Amino acid sequence: MCATAATPIAAGLLLAGVSPGTVLVFLIAAPVTSLATLRVFRREMGNRALVAYLAGILASAVLLGLGVDAVTSWWQLDIARQIEAVNELLPAWVEWVGLVVLVGLAVKPLRRTLAGHLPHHA
Image (cartoon, rainbow, N blue to C red; front, side):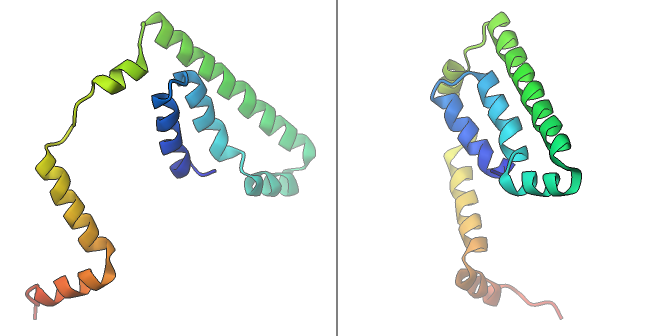
């Protein structure tokens, strides 16, 4: 799984109440343990290096996850409650303008139509 795909999953895990340390372990381990990456690593470096690589990822990810859980516990942070307490960060009109711009840029026929109405430079 790539980091881009792992990020929204991690956010969903946090919203579901999974501990921040566990989510961090997921974010660290998921992108670096794809089968394609492991195959290439094994072919280039060998089985011993692959085992050391995986052991290093496992140990560092778990230790960092435990550390994050310890810090959130020590500081008495309740991530789920903080997420629920956050109001909208942007006014609604900014969100709608952003949506219109994004759709305009993403939809090719709409982009062509808009380009036809823009002034041309000589």
